[in-house]
Length: 181
Ligand code: 4NP
Image 1: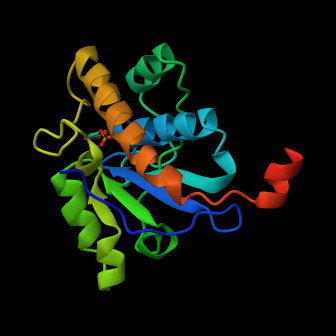
Image 2: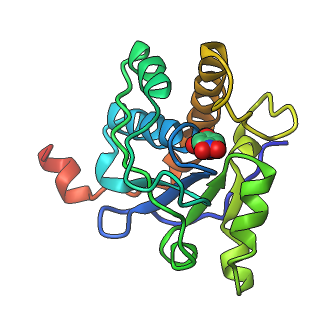
């Protein structure tokens, strides 16, 4: 069963904010950020979503995404433009949805939460995957290129399903729609 998110109206004034979180913020979560941004852009919804990524560890802060992650994503026309940052407790307030790549990330994020409202925002990204396996995205960092391809496929499948669930919550500005602006 795919997780069903709480309904909320998404407008340009109140965009839906999501952050993908892995360990280093150089492989899996930058792929999530890049793929979701690409899907949102393709759907013409970039004003309605704010998409970010972060790592639970600080080891790679300031670094661009891993070169293999970037190369694989570019094969699909998806640029990965993030610079690594560490996940902060305040992200639990800012974001509507916090998407952990594996169960260790999930536990480390929840350890920073102090309220039920914060805890409810934290999900495993693969809760939205139609083929969720064990609901974790395998860490590709120490492996070969095939692992990076697998990460991309998992992320793309999950993000497509997640965006389909969010699209009906988008409330287009009727005036802008009428004038086509
Ligand atoms: P990520 O992959 O969590 O998907 O960004 C990793 C990146 C770096 C390390 C581990 C995983 N590391 O041990 O430095």
